[in-house]
Length: 170
Image (cartoon, rainbow, N blue to C red; front, side, top):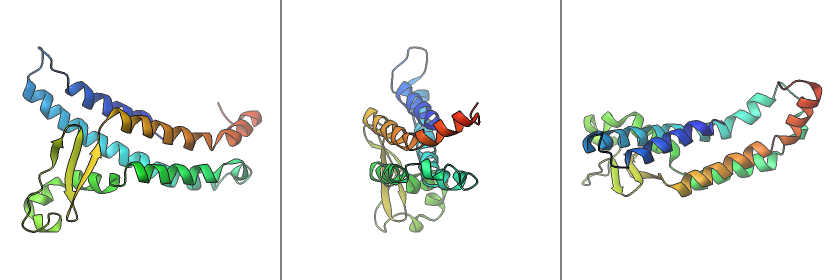
């Protein structure tokens, strides 16, 4: 799983929150939105990898499938879903943001105005399928994601050791 991309997007977001005498505040605000968008995409990509990679990548390696801790993989997927239940929805909202302007009835509850953005500190929100979806862009979120990814990768330790012993890992 490419956790580094998620971490980099978070670092960019946090960097944009620091006032700088060399960068206009309006530029930092714009970059913060871009960084938040990158966070939503990268967190969703990470979630997809956690859901899909293990089964698909190991199908061609039946000799090591029994060495993978499938329970740990299932628990990692569940942990990700508990941590970021709206990851895919907010990614879709950000990816199709213009649709809210063109036909807001698809995503916004009638009679309410949902504007995407920061309504609380470090909480990025966007409307999708008649609900306001949110992702917390905090140190706690990235620490919890790091734990999820570590547990996921640990599920492959025995399989990796076997491949290493066979000389298949370089």
